[in-house]
Every structure is written in C-alpha cells, then in structure tokens.
Amino acid sequence: MSRFNTRSTRPAVHSPVTTTGERAVTHEGGAGHLRDAKSELFLLAVSNFVSQDAFYEKGSQRDDRYTQLVRKLAIEDPEWTVGLLGWLRREGNMRTAANVGAAEFVQARLDATRSATAPTDGTFDAGFNRRVIDAVLQRADEPGEMLGYWTSKYGRKLPKPVKRGIADAIQRLYNERSLLKYDTDSKGYRFGDVLNLVHASPADDKPWQGDLFKHALDRRHGSNEEIPARLSTLLAREQLTSTPVDQRRQVLADHTELLHRAGMTWEALAGWLQGPMDKQAWEAIIPSMGVMALARNLRNFDEAGVSDEVAAQVAAKFADPEQVARSRQLPMRFYSAFNAAPSLRWGHALEKALTASLANIPQLGGRTLILVDTSSSMHEAFSKDGSLMRWDAAALFGIALGRRCANADVVSFSSARYYMNDAPGAKTKTFPLTAGGSLLGDVKKWRDGGWFLGGGTDTAAALRQEFRGHDRVVIVTDEQAGHDRVELDQSIPQSTPMYTWNLAGYQAGHAPSSRGQRHTFGGLTDAAFRMVPLLEAGRDATWPWMQEG
Image 1 (cartoon, one colour):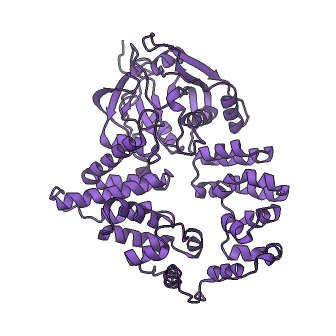
Image 2: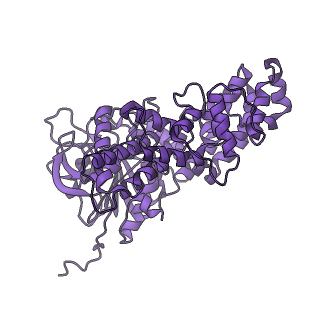
C-alpha cells in the first residue's frame, strides 16, 4: 500500500508567518503556539491602532510589545524591518503604527551605537535610519507628526538621520496644495518650523519649491511678503480670501473654476463661506473631492439635496478601480460609509468601490469551509471612534471570500459553553450566500439577521462540527480559543490546508504555521489572500513587500 504517492499528497510549502515550536496558552486558556519575532511583529503591526485597547490587552501593553519588537529587529534585521514599516504605511494603510515604528527603529540603532552593541560587520550604518524615516512619511502633515512624536519622547535634539529622512520626504510631499491643507494654526509644528529644524533643500526637478519653502517660512513668522508669482495656487487662494464675505456666494455661483485653481477642500470651503454647506456649495466642490472625502460625506450630500447628476459623478469615482486604489482606503471604510448613508442611491456605487478594494481575493476551486469568529472578543472596536468592530471585518472578509469560491460554506462560530467548566462545544450558524447578489447586502443581512453570536471561542469544536471533507479551511479570527481536548491542528486531516486570517495580533496563535498545510496571514486589506493560490500551487510565499519586486 502506497504511503506517500497518493492523490491527497501535496508539496511542502512555506509561508512567512512562522511558529517556533514553543508552546503557550491563549488568553482563553487554549493551546497556544508562539511565533518568531518577525511573525509576531507583522501580525501585531497590521492590526494595531496605536494606543487602542484590545479585548485582552491594554493599548499601552500592545504599544510596548510593538515597540520592543521593532527595536529588537532594527538591530537583528534592519533591511526586513525597513521593508515592513514602509509597506505598513503604504499598502497596509497603517499610518500611526508605521511612523511610531520608524522613530523607535532609529532610536534603537542609535542606542546600540552608543553602547557599542552594534554589529561590527560593516553593514550596520548602511543608511537604514534615514531610509526608514523617508519611507513612512507619505502625507505632507507627517513630517510634523514625526517631529511631534520624537521630541515628546526623546527631546528636541534631532539626530542627523531623522533630519535627513524628513528632508527627503519634504521634497516629495511639500507643494502648494499640501501647504494650504495641512499648514494650520492647530499644528504644533508648522511647515516653516519643520523646514527650520531639518534644513531641507528644494528638489532639483521642482524649481518652484524654493519659493514655496520661503513662503512657508514667511507665513510662519507672520511676514507680509508677497506670494511669489510661480505659486499660482496660493495666489488664487489669496484672491478668494480677499473676497468680501457677502460676495462669496456669488463667486461660488459664477467662478467654480477658481475654487479648483485655489486648491479648495470641502473643509476650507466651509470656513471660507462662513455659512452652511448647502446644495450649491457641495455641488461646486464635489468634482474636486477624492474618494475618501466623498465616502465620509454621503449623509451630508443627501441632507443638502445634491442632484442626481452630481451624485452620478460621485458614483463614477467609486466605480473607478484606479481612484479607489489611490485613495488607500481599507475595505471596511466603504462598509462604514454604506451604514452611514441614509439613502439607497449610494449602495451600488459603494458596492463597486468595495469590490475594487477587494481585487486581490482569488477565485478558489473545490469546496471551501470559511469559519468566521464572532465571539465576544471579536466585538471590539478597531479605533477609538468605535464605528467598526473586528467582527465586522471578519464577516466582510469571510463573505467576500465565500462569494469568490466555486463552492463555499461560510459559518459564524463561537462557543456553546455557559460556564467555564462546561465541556467544549461550538455554537455555529451557516450563512446563506446570495447568488449574484450584493456583497454589502449580504454583510447587512449578516449583521441584522443574528450571525454575530457572542460568547466564548471554541474554534476546534466548531471545525470538527462543520468540516465535511472540504478541500481547504479558512478561519477568520483573533486566535484566542478556549481549551479543547483535541487541538485545532489535529481536528482535521493534516493533508487539508488550513489558513488562519488573524485580525488581532495577540502573541500566541491557535495553530502552528508556515510548514505543511498550516499557514497564518493577517491584516485589514485583501493583500494576503494572494498567498492562498500560490501555496496551493506548491510555491513558497514570502512577505508582501518582497512580492512587490
């Protein structure tokens, strides 16, 4: 009888998130598996909104764990860590975590140099400190944010690599429109302050940038110097600002093109009008608004009564995959906008935007079991505004994947236990996917129809209960399962691929990962879904920023 040459034999593959073989317990007392430092940092980074409490960890505990991991890997593998932090800010869409990580990366390496613990192989001073600062600064207000974080924690003396990294970013980010949008009195570090501290030079290919820098310094110091002639956007804004308040509505009616030339945002327009943002105001500014601003103002558009013709312009932007990609919005933002919008006319447009933001979800053949963790620990907010919960993301990703599978069973699960000493048992509820229907409609049905179960987490019991010889299993969870007599890894055949989608970044995972048919991914975007067909084709998968090249 053949033991290895069978139809179920699959090639051994490796994925990047790796368990070490060391054991622990989850926060619910179940069997836990510790990961190596890179894996732990990656899963924490892609799910950590800085200073935000999680169900089992205080925000300060998570931040400290994150900081210590960054500092450790800044010494051990700076190339990898720079790649992570740059990707985290760009494709990962995590702004604060990336900026904090870059600052701690630099400080750790400076500390190592001062204490003579830095490696002596000649690679330590390869420009990593400057590179990481430049890599994470992706918006024009972030040089000031970096200075605010650094000086509040490490004092006003700025190391050279911090200055140079910020100066590199300034050449990319500072322009007339960013000055108008972000250089405000509410900021502790204005553009002029940043320029004074880091001594940035204008970019060689931007001859106007020298004039911009001079003007930023002039306005910071209250100078009445004239705006240089090359700064046409600032001159247009000055023209608008000098218009008497009682004439501004007429300008809005007769000179809409001037608003665009002056780089007016909807926030700036509201302040300039010194009155309500009514139908006329919204219809004048909507053509120049980006996807993110549009998604956040759908309720305002309805309340103001914008016309169907203008609403169609909004819908066209949501339907454009390139504009959605440039907006860098997490998929849940479109779901949040759908929940906030009072009228039905935005539904189809938001469906298009959400679909575009989930373009990496693959089509999977065969039968797929998708388990969505809706236990109480998943009922926690990602951020302080509390508008989106972890189980919202779990349901969204689970349903979206299910709709792309040839045959999928999408099942919500938690625990059937009432008391801590009860025997393990799962509470499950299968979700009926709507053939050819709306993803947003399905997610709304999940929310309104009782698929958020609450209670404890009996993942292994749910897996045994729902597994029916599927070709693969995907579990979307925080991995904090309760004790079970049979470990999760042993609850289905070893030949069946099991993919864990981690949405919380706790230290201990619920299963081994990286070898055989057990793999863990993480994050709040669809990017890691690309690994599934790669692994099933018998190819190793690597970190997402290494795939880009």
